[in-house]
Length: 577
Image (cartoon, rainbow, N blue to C red; front, side, top):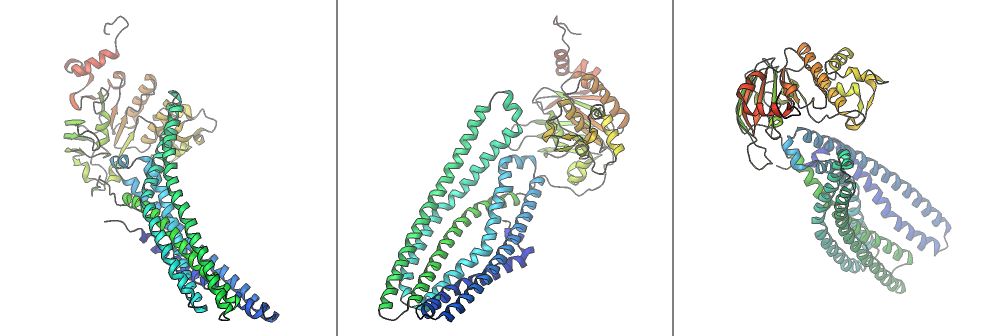
């Protein structure tokens, strides 16, 4: 079922009602002006009657002021309603994006989600503002202008009868051509945003590989495609405006001709003909405005469809019902198999079964592509298994509420994600209400305090976007502190110590054993030296478990582990240590 975006306007119904009502006042004032002007010409100027000129002139000024006040009110009310509409819609779309699984956000792409959250919502928001004002003004001006013109002379109906169908036919053709192009336009904006997002976030890689020219060429391709679609739209508009203007001007000429004949026949006065010309112009201009609104509405429809696509995408990962802490921090994988939904269908993990006792320090080792990161992505339910089950404290993780499950688990990723702000603010991500003592304690365990305290501003030091002002090891230790401050039941390191030297890593392991003795720690690592002192080591090879035991036992029973150990401990002469 499609989400109705109009529901976001309901809370602001008063503004949405006052905007068209005040617009009615502005239109009525505009419709009075030509009649007042005809009075000045016919009864004042031609009759040399200055009192009439002054009287009608003052009335025109008052009507203009009232119309201006009504117009300002209409614009204000429409802006208040549309801006509030856009704010609430943007909030809900962002909230929905935050609930989507990694699979779903990958399918939309980051660039497309940014476009939908910004450009698409702005287009729909602008349509709301236009609808509250111009969708009222144009029809009223159209009908009012016709009525006023016909009250002057029914013969003017002949001119309108001929010109209006021509304008409407032109508008229909334009809308038919423009509608499909707007979907293409938003897609091209997605492409430009995607290229920009990738290159800004990956600027260091681009520079390291001297790929500026190649990426500029890729951006130019996306930019040129956007330009070409915009040109198509511009060409359509370029045909519309002049065509409708020609019809309008020809209609005015005919009105003047017909009015001139009636003046000669003494059926009309000059002022009446002038008023008829103005009313005819208002009628035809209102048709032009309606055409522009319908074209804009076609674009807004394309944007609205894209917004609804996000709002109507419900999270694949469903939350459970249990909202209480883990019974204990034991972890069990029971015949788990998994393949990525957007992949080739090949199983990344096959029939995985093992158990981690509460408080154990477990390491996961294996070659690149063996499924290590995939394995730990399943535990906080970034992805759900295809078959089998995962238990924490004897309870299937699918039965826990997602917020509860993830609040009990802390994950430190290989890629250190930091945010603009101070070091303190970044660490507080793990626990927003943490005290200064807790921040200091977590930083000491993570071996981060030693470098943070050397900064002039200490924990108030500003961190650049994504932590670019820090070294790789500093970023990793800050992310570790952010995880430790939560005092989680389960702590996962996804190769999160790769930028640390062995001495710092050893201090980190010792501090973890002392401060988080009851926490279950799962550590992915590439170096044997980083994992050999773990309680047990899980060895993966092509998505299957080929060993699960302490270091000494694996050295006797696991060929894959032995090969990894030997490859990392070769002497220069080629023999083993």
